[in-house]
Every structure is written in C-alpha cells, then in structure tokens.
Length: 501
Image (tube, rainbow, N blue to C red):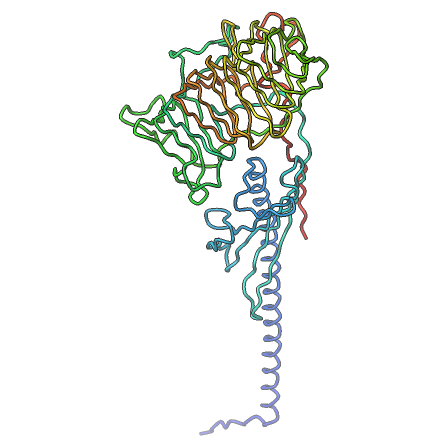
C-alpha cells in the first residue's frame, strides 16, 4: 500500500504570498480611506451649498421683518443710532425671535441653526435701504471650531408715484403713539355715504343703516398700561392695540361696567366680543405726506388786516371752479364768536399759525369743500363755537379736512356746539374732544381723549378715495375733495437685489 506524503513549501515562497496579501490589503485601505475622505469633502461641500441657500432665504425673511417695521413705523426692539436701525434675530420653530432673548434656535439638521443681522439705513426718511445678512452655523468639526456661512440681501427704496387717491382714513379713531380714551361713555358706529351703485344718490347717516365697521386703534407700543380705554363707551365695530411684551394678549384694552365692543352676531349677554378684538400685528394707521398747493389769493374777503388773519365774516370759494381756490393766512385763523365764513366752492386754507374758531365756517353748496393745513410747528387747533358745519341736504365727511404733520406737542381741542362732518389728521398732536355733538368722519391724533359722551359715526366712504375733480360732471355732482386732495402716498420699495458672498 502506497502512502502520499506532503511536501512543504519552501519558507521563501510562503513569505512572498504573505507579502502579496499585505500589499493588496494596503491598496484596499488606501483606496477606502481616500474614498471616505472624498465622501466627507463632498458632504461638507453639499452641506455648505445647502446652508448658503438657506442663508439667502433667511436673509430675505429679515428683509420682510424690516419692511414691516418701515411700513408700520414700528421700531420697538430695534437699536437706533445715527439714522440707522439694527436688529439681530434667531430663527426658531415659531419664526424670527430677538437673539437677545436667548431663544431656542430651529435645528435645520446636524445641529445647524441660523440667525439674521438686519440693518435699515436712513430708517426715518422717505428713501431707506435694507441690508439683511443670514448667517448659518455649521456642525462642530473635529478641530473644535464651528465654521459659518452667510448671504446678504439688499433692498433699496425708490419714491412711489405721487397720488391723491389713497385710502387714508381707515379707522374711526386712531392714536399714533399715544392712547385712545373715552372718559365719559359715548357710542361709535359706522355707515357709508357713497351712493348705492346705479342710484347716484349720496346717503346721510341714519340709525337704521348704522353698521359695525368702526375701528378704534392705538399704535402705542411703548406703554405697559391699556392704550385703548373704552370706559363705558359702546363700540359697534373693532378695537385693536398692541402689548410689547405679550403681543397675543389684550392687555392693551380696558373697559368699565357699561363698556361694550360688539358686532352684528354678538350674543346679547356679551359685553366685549373677543371676535372684535384684533391683537396682531401692530394696528394699521396710514401715514402720508402733505403737499400744500401754491397759494395765489389772500383771504381779504374775510380779513380785517389785509388777508394776514381770517377773522371776519365773508365768502370764500367759487362754486363753478375746476380747481380749489387757495388762501394763505400768515397770522392764521382767529374767527371770533358771531363771525361766520361761508364756503361756496372748493377751498384750501394754509394757516401759518394757530387755527382758533369761536364763530363758525359753513359749507353752503354741493361743490363746497374745505381743507385746512396747519403749516408750522408749535401751532394748535381749537375748533369751538359752531365749528365747521355743512348745510347741504347730505353733508359728506369727505368734504372737510383739517390736517398737519408739522405741528407737534401742543394740544388741540374740539368743543363745537354743532355736529362736525369731516376728518382731523394731527398724528403728532394730542387731541381732546369735549363736544357733546355727534362727529361724522374720522379723527387721528398722537393721542385722542373724549371727555364727553359723544357719538361718533365713521364714514366707510373714507376708505374709498376718488379724485376731487372729474371734469364736466363737476357741476352736476357733489365732488369729493378735501379729505383726499394734496396728499401723497409714502415711498414704496422696489429693486430687490440678492448678493451671495
């Protein structure tokens, strides 16, 4: 029987095979490590590109935040210095929040989060510009540093087209930086004086057509007390304010035992209907630019000092005029008791100083309208006596306007003994209304206080402006005028340009 015997490999051949296996393993190791490094670099680049896209999106969100502040003149929580406003905000799960409040940032994945640095240059001018930088923090790497990536979006303002037909008086009563107070009750409702479509007939106020669209608003964001104080007033409409610390609350509203805020569907037992409370955003009251026209005629017909002061009875305006007659009173209006100025056509009065009315101004024709500008800082309005009345069958609030953006600090008063049809726009002046006579129209002041139980009937036609003069039909229709003339819309934003570093 034969036996097979194994012949061992020489030692030199076994060493060569092991060396070949080690070389092959080394090649695999080098290839794999290179591939892993390539994958890591690719992941890093991909992550950075994604974050760069998110940066641009976040920067655009910052632009929207700045636009809101510009359009609403809301610079609370912004840092103001040298004409510029700055703010740093962190993106959270519920939106942008001030970084100074140390909010929990939104996790975009792998521990990445973002913030935005916003700058509004020349924020308080008609041509501000916005720069918004979105910054993303990348994941912590092995070296212990957190790299960031950023993108900047700029937004430049250009003047808007000038127009005299913009919705200016959207609230029944509005305070810009102060409070609205009803100290002695009162009532607020709404109606619409515009003609029913197809009828051509303007509508006078009547309780049967009273509605629930009147808005009481305060833009005061600097107080921690109630900025809208109804007391015992009854409001058929809405109330809106803002609490800086708790925007979603209604701490800005206070009311007494007889106070009501109701709508058409409010249950009888409900005094303050929560559906009629608007909490956010900051209440809207348009701000606009005044553009008093050039004057060519002195009011000598109503003046005892060669037109320097309107202080005597007389007639102003031309019923057949196709443009307002503009009067300039260098010593203002100081109409004593017993003196009456009759307005027969479209009239603009530019008063260099105070407007003090103890007598009366009367609109007597359908074409009559009156716009009074307070031209200088430090002037005031005292609308007393018979005030400004309209003897037309349908007196329109849009036919009378008293306004200024120049005067500030001084207190203006309304204490007329006759109903007032018109608008008062004094956004930088506190207004005290002590009359018990009804007011038809709209009042806007730095703050507005009612010391008597006055009825306010807001005219919805003030939200639908039309040009004052419509050509040949002027003589046959009641032209609009006054409330919408010689006013410009604020600047608008265009030309958005994104810059990615």
